[in-house]
Length: 258
Length: 246
Image (cartoon, chains in turn cyan, orange):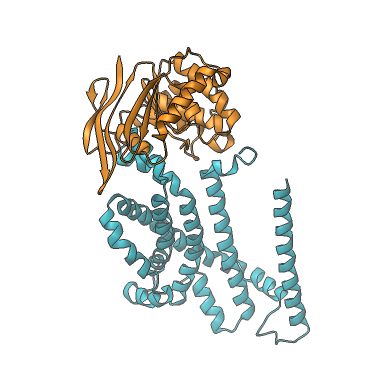
């Protein structure tokens, strides 16, 4: 009871803070403290959003499909590699440091190369999304496999479980929590990754739209698309949380008994 | 009939010898305790019997068959119930059957038949975190039983429970054990528990651990709580404590 109440109160306070921020922004803009063409007011942004709604949605469609395809490939690759790395220790030792090092290369720096290699089509975007999404998911799975309870592992071995059975009944289910944490990061990366790749050239997508409105100094549209990108990320993260609840029903039980 | 025995088992880790010349036997329907202080190599012996660790010398026999270093023959139960938090009690309990290749539905049916007997009826669809410690241990015991109907290996299974739960689960265990005709090898450091439950007690002591004494507890079963206050009980206790101090 109290937990629920606290959660509602927390949500209410963060909502109130956002409303306050918007109000201050609107006031600053209406009072003319900052020139309108540089910082459009929230109301201007809403109008820009409504005015360009059709175009925004069709561009969002392109970006989202790039993000989903890339995310799908990244998750599949992460599962395959994490499985192999867990199964063969030499692979784990050989590849884990490489995985970590690969993360120090900023995606923004790779994106131009990908465009040079693959052109303006959809493939460099998907490739960049795969690159940015693969790591959090793979590391989540790997750490999850490694964190499986040793005593339970020994019990399964004593019961004569094969390696595949140990994977299926212990390691994989034990890794779900970390997998979903990784996936939640990956979905937000996927949208941002697709947008970054689109900046560097393409035919449609929110990143392409951004470069167009930037060139025409349409700041209101610029803000509209920025909000759209973050709303999309938030919605996707929410979807992952819902999937997590469905996949891990036992997380919601046992609050009353200890 | 002899169910389980070890013959001259020894084990070292590096230069340190932890077990020396351990020979114990367990007859059908018997409850035998290995009573030892911490560090006497109880858990090592336990790992060797369950087959997940190879001894340096000696053999482990189950029904006369040499099972030394072979996992998948004897299951065990520990202080930690080791129920998987992400499986319902029913799915946890029927796991050994599934590992043996049974279909999920069949395994669930078979496991379901025992829930009443083990006093956990109604918990089938719950997750482990919804059960009390005593109930979880019962479920863990049912899982052990479903793995093998003959021999149960218990490593301090009740030592994490509070005194009252422990005392009631002792009575329950002796009852259920007789009903399903289980033979039990029980490892504990609790002298009272050993005397209350056992037909025989092996004392495991020293470094490296060796069997220093074998005591037959002749008191009639079932033994109720009043037995723990009887002079017979205290006599056993005095003798064992004396032997352990040597």
